[in-house]
Length: 398
Ligand code: ATP
Ligand code: MG
Image 1: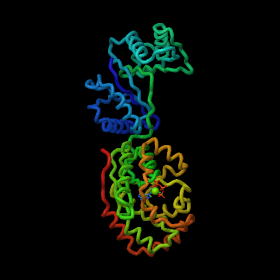
Image 2: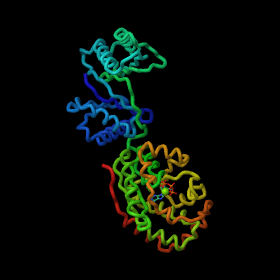
Image 3: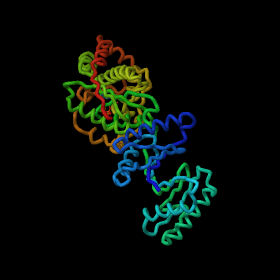
Image 4: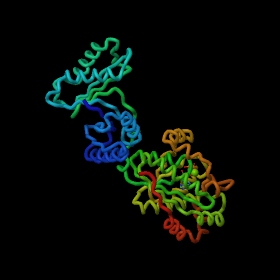
């Protein structure tokens, strides 16, 4: 009998050819994420992947724990189960399976628990059907462990026996993150500030399978190197889930000073946001990305009222994904804590928006007025070119 991990992924959305792409992307992401745990052999099973514990790790108790933790951070997985496995050979009999199930139960559970055996029989070579197997296994367990009781509705322990290319025996499923494997949905550029919202937004879109690059607008010396380091650290934390991220640090001081000097102050933020979007699109094009991602949330601040978002969005040609648009701050904070970006986000380094912010920003800007004000920015096209060209590119994650 061997040991391993059964990886479950959601099957519904991925029929036909897409399934192979999905599975292959998931396998690649798993191998990459668990690369420190030795060379992995990953087998495909219908709707599942199986990862045997490598021989050299059999006596290494930490291996399983680290592998499970790693898998629980990979998008596309809905559950992971440490399993005992039996090879399916012609000599495999019901008795052999029953013995293995009993050994599993005896090892994993002590005390007077209620249980139920569930059987899935994808491999139809077995003569007994799944109901028969489950009830017969239940009977054998009761015989050997009279202190246990059967509860088919709400058991404390659900023993799963899956007959596939191999036989898998397990009693617990740890939850996965769900979503789609990173790399299966195209590329997007995340506008990443040092705040709480944008790392969460990036994480949420990576969860749908997008590969990310990130764009950070840096107004040196008004924003310090520590603010930049903070953003890079956030990118690193997102990359734990999203894979390697190229971060573009865009020199933004010249543009920001120009806006400050030439445009009405209550419009500063909107005009700045519109220029950020244009620069981010240019970088997205270079990266062959087809969407932008922001951490905007409706009504959170003056620049995120509908009228403001309307003005910001009017310069964009690409789809702009705003996955936290309908979330309350508290909901965003909860995700930030869960994905481990919160502590970094609340470090007190200023960002460029807080320095160049107006006392009374417009909450109902009119697109016409904004466009008129922008006419004062006569060097804007060249400034945008320069900002894109002079961006510093830093890759985070491995
Ligand atoms: P966050 O918590 O992500 O900073 P916020 O609530 O502070 O968001 P704003 O400062 O209005 O909101 O920014 C809204 C969105 O614009 C951010 O979520 C981010 O996507 C983008 N953004 C703002 N400032 C920057 C910046 N300096 N560099 C890159 N993107 C930025
Ligand atoms: Mg911010």
